[in-house]
Length: 153
Image 1 (cartoon, rainbow, N blue to C red):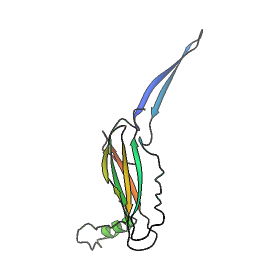
Image 2 (cartoon, one colour):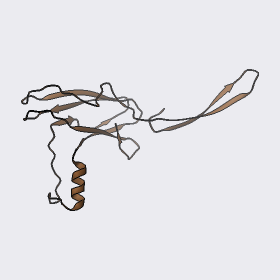
Image 3 (cartoon, rainbow, N blue to C red):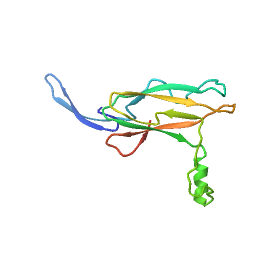
Image 4 (spheres, helix red, strand yellow):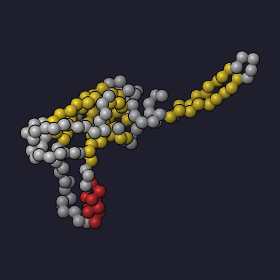
């Protein structure tokens, strides 16, 4: 298929010798994304790291499609639902200012345009001055050329 979410229609003609021709309509629609990563990044384990050291992991995304993708990393705030409910109730103490979220990890580049048949290497860095297990959730969203709705990679 050209790319994901594109519907292709065609016909399969089966010609039987000394018989009739069988005409079969075909329809195919792609699913998922043309962005691929060799590594499994569902969970990125940084291992044991001393508090004064920086943890670092790298991974590569490839665009195997024919359209460019704008990739954007977003931190998923585990308290977003609670904050939204508080804000909706009118218990917002931030005086209309956005809350600054300090994360242990960051991903670079945070935003990039990935052209067809190209690859990009992302780097996850983590540093924290307090001992303990640190976990954060990040999502990669893609805006595909010709579309105005981002999809989750």
